[in-house]
Length: 404
Ligand SMILES: [Zn+2]
Image (cartoon, rainbow, N blue to C red; front, side, top):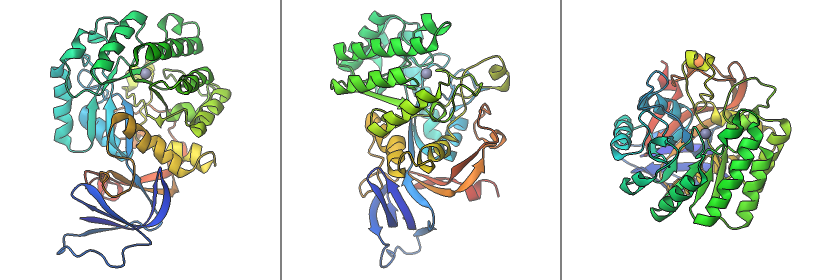
């Protein structure tokens, strides 16, 4: 049993001051104003003084690359999960562009077993949409079990008919397709057209097949407008934005895919967050070695800095309230995934994070648990320090204990 005392409790439903009791991996009661007396439990009660700090549902990341199997020099399941809990995440959905790509149960089981051994967080391993990420063929989908999401992320599915067939198979199997919307024939000449044109095509395929579609890392004004239109048609359509596309414009020279965009695009993304068009924030955590990054590999090691960046850019700036950020980082993605998480409420899983929003911390990649030190945010200050992360009712990260 654990009690968080005198916390500022924030979730998508709002905020209140009080105590939260956790037992058996669940939130069992929330007392506004605090428990009149602490429940007796024969010395087994752990009391955490949360006064002055925010207790929220821990975060759910629908989009991370842990590079395992295949690229242990960039990241492994173990280092990726250590980074996740430091960032306040206890659920991560891993992309399938590993080596070999995750197209069969042998590779998926390898990831699941490694993740389970760490005990740090809930992991879902995506399977590829096309077999071996070769861009066509979806015969492997019928052989998958326990798979919720399919994605060829890293690239889009160029062949529309191949994606159409994959989406029909995904729909029949009760799966969601996550698309990296980038038309590769335009990538070298116009990255905006590459994103917008494939987003439009994919939304039409969503309409035609009835397969739930989640658009990854929406970064342009045009693509956010297309998603809003698709949602107004009642399609099974969701989308995400990343912290870096909300925080940085193309005046920062740093290679990510999709690329950093203009201030006008950021304004459109924030408006889409306010209007509800954007369902969640995902990190697109993409660790690389220093050598690979120097050679032009796109991506940011972002899972440890995501909350502080979003808190500073969206909440401290006054654009949205902390409950809405909680919805974007916990309840929203939990709903798309199908997890019983995202609210600090009796009956919900005890997946929690304790945050100090009054502390500004400088980003120091040397301090990352991730093997990827690639970040354009190094040296920058952000508010919102993760103090403690709880998974399944157990503390899996404590900033005080980590470095004695
Ligand atoms: Zn992608």
